[in-house]
Image (spheres, rainbow, N blue to C red):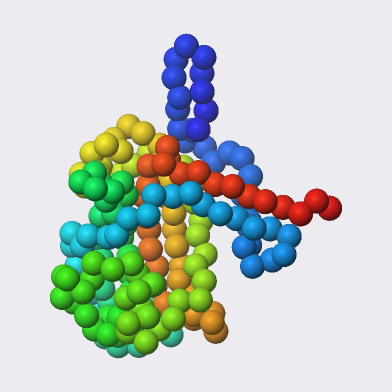
Length: 179
């Protein structure tokens, strides 16, 4: 994201800058995020066949993969949109709409799979058309796209998510010990 005086703020089409890694488990880095917490509302659930490639690569069990499209709202206002993929076997095979209106880590826990940590890669982008359709307020604004991978204690991938959130609602604070 860059600004031009008298013209406006723009999103660069080129990847510029540096990638920073923050590990909240180490004693030298602690991170906290002030993000609006909201519960998901399921707006779409597609059951897909679990391919041999994904089954082998991630050691996923079962035959069905759930593709969840969910909207996160604060009050009546949508704030973010997510696409999450998880084996149906990992959420107890639950496909009832009411049961899927919980955060992904809770769905996994209820299916007997405890998410130990999540790796997220966050990038500022313009919202794609699919996101704008569900959250019109994100049109022509930078959003934070967070690619998330949920892991158990042994490092097994439990689920994968792609979240789009209003960049203006994101605030991060990083505390580091002096060297």
